[in-house]
Image (tube, rainbow, N blue to C red; front, side):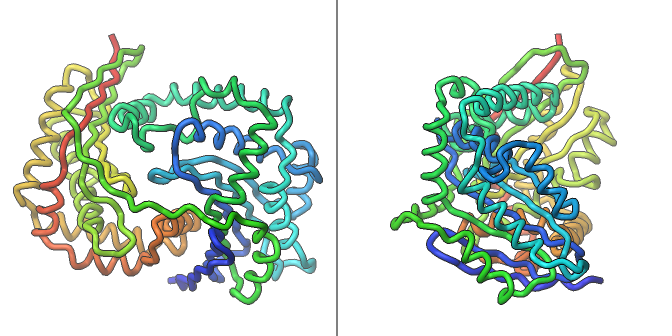
Length: 423
């Protein structure tokens, strides 16, 4: 069993945080730079477009060809830019992975890579009219391509309908209807403002100590910041509205159903919330193969081709998604509600609770060896102002009892059902 390493979080300046995962398991250094802002209209479209332009390089590397040559010169490093959503936050995520200099005779690889990431954020060359128009079309095409993933499409549509007027109802890719009015100079000014005001998280994972990396990060990423940084607002679960059913017809052979629920539980920074019970409850319901929904609806009754549940931890939402025959929709909907009702009544078996607990333990304690999973876990902690380690969360899950599961299940309320079906 490899060591989990050590994790350290340091505030460099107001709104800029260094997160170091010091671990000797890898032969590379991974750096994740995240610029986060609350999701809102129409800023979400500007953020999405600016993320596309950041991927085009810097003034020192003014085109894709020179950027690719630079990345290749870093001994085949990996570089990517994406925009994503985490709860009610929209995040521009830059990721660079370079070989650990301890395995080379050459020094300065990491510093060159970090300088490049700084230049991308502060000196991006993509904010030109020709580049912007090209990226508008590419982003529109990316959004349209999502139409082909029918399950993903159904999940997005359920979120949109269920959370209309809320940040969770917005796409991190923006709204194509906003794109035409965006000008390059406006977008450049908007991005410069963001780099001075929005939260910046710098994650470094590799065989490094804080004394090695902190001075370098401070020299590169602590530019002038706005005096009054926006304060994170506590996340409050919203109350479910009147139950709704949304039906949409497309040329699909297999219908997709997504059932959305409000749980009244959101992941909290103080470690006193009911999230551990909700995470355990989700695995029992439909979060894994041995779950109740898979066992009862798929294996025993054959009502669906597949079925699973998942939770949006930062927003207090639970979704059940399934592939079905459209005619089976009423029965599937009612059966899922019956399963949730049995949880509300406290009808748990010791065996299923322990199986779910064992799986959660493996996932949480395995995060240290999963760079992507560990990074996302720590980013979530940072955005809510928390400092709970995976080990601490696991200790809380160990203490969850039947009464906790029953209480949390009692707060799960059906909100929106979305059915994508054929003719």
